[in-house]
Image 1 (cartoon, rainbow, N blue to C red):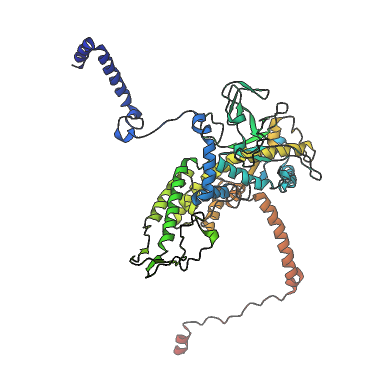
Image 2 (tube, rainbow, N blue to C red; image 1 turned 90 degrees about the horizontal axis):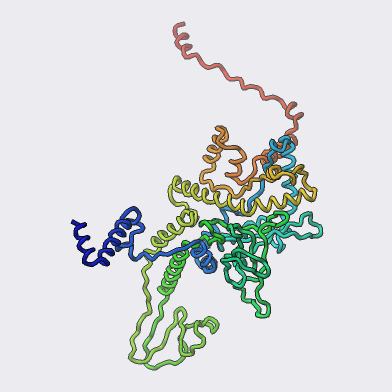
Amino acid sequence: MANIIDKVIRAVAPIHAAKREYARATLSFVDSGYGNYGANQTKKSMRGWMYGGGSAKEDIEDNVDVLRQRSRDAYMGIPVATAALKTLRTNVVAGGLMPAPQIDAEFLGITDDEAEKLQKQIIREFALWADTPVCDAERIDNFYMLQQLAFFSYLMNGDAIVLLPVKETIGQPYSLRIRLIEADRISSPDGYDRLAPCDVDGHHVEQIVQGVETDKDGMVIAYWICNRHPLSSTFNITAPAKWVRVEAYGSMTGRRNVLHVMNRERVGQKRGVPILAPVLESLKQLGRYTDAEITAAVLSAMFTVFVQSQTADDGRPFGEMLPPQELIDQADQSSIELGPGAIVSLNPGEEVQFADPKHPSTGFDNFTDAMIKQIGAALEIPPEVLFKQFVSSYSAARGALNEFWRSCQMQRDWFTDDFCAPIYEEWFTEAVARGRINAPGFFADPAIKKAYTTCSWNGPARTNLNPVHEVEAATKRVEAGFSTAQEETASMTGGDYNRNIRQRVIEAKLKKEVDDIINPPEKAQSAPQPQPIQRPPAPDPEEPERQRRM
């Protein structure tokens, strides 16, 4: 029947018939698969969904400037945002990730004792450089403080740029330096991205997106760094901004000149996204709501009383007690600002009224808890951890900590790969080149270099709600071969098992010396041995009966 109708319409009105066929094909496509659900455009529930998108450049790079500024503003003014960033920093990096060299003795053909001796030397040498502010190009923080700053910059700005210059300093054995660059300074020259081959200051470049230069294959080859912060208020017209091109890897040596601390979420992405970006709107609304509730609570606690009198009084309100520097509007001389307990005299015939603002806040806790749960889920921070309150059951609290620990461990792993490990390898290379560490074949074979520079980085330990049970579980895992004492020590305390054993040997010797001083062995041998206590034999229960018969 439908075919006959279509033929009739096609003969009478071919254009209308073509539209019918197109609409039928469109509906058959839309109403299949996702077209009937998430991609449906005809349902009333989906018509109001405003959507749009593009590549990583349109969705991320073109908006990253606004995201950075709003993320920093949220951190400085919204308590939940501040708590989220600080919680992640404390649990991922804390006081800094400590290196634990793991030399591949088998591949290098050395004994375990030789490897252990070399690892001790590496730790001592690394401390000469890392424990002092000399490693910082600004000479302010040591290596572990720079870890905190780099990771916090990544959280707040989306990424952090690290330069590795060299500078000789008198009295210092190493010249490697770490210079952190805030993300805003990595930008395209003059603020314009280059999406086609062009020349910039004599350099032929393929493409520049937000200060990151790539070749025709999309490989990052250089970074463009502005000589000043683009938001700095000290900008001088006579000293315009200039950009310096820094190669990602040295063209002659292949050395890493720039480290880009970033966690990508899109293919083709060149710049990082602040971790608060998906929840910025919720955070801002929550901050506004909190401010409104605080203001309402303060106002509801104040009562301004207007008293009727027979004569008007043009003087200042009695009991105002507001000093001039605290007035909100000093320019308006006609405004009168009342302080706590202020009383204003009124003209005859006016009534007395009490300014008693009311604002119900009974649902404040429930609403904020619900919002923070959603924000915490997006940031992979359980609300118990975000609030630092474990008021639920032991199982629920332990489950929340375990889930949060997975997130922290993942971020710690990639931060180690982006920041700690490359810097450690550069330092190790300089130590070998200067002859302070003996590593035969280090420069001859990359595999040998890798065997020498393998290192694990231990950080803050997981929170233990029941340390006794945690120790018992760790002991059973080690005994069953599911884990090692080294791994369990790093997980539970953030320490090093081998160092602990060596320290325990020293402590045991010291304790024995103290015990020998308090109770010398000669005194212990000459001391009279305690005599066993002579106890009378137990009475025979049949003795009374025996005596009666006699």
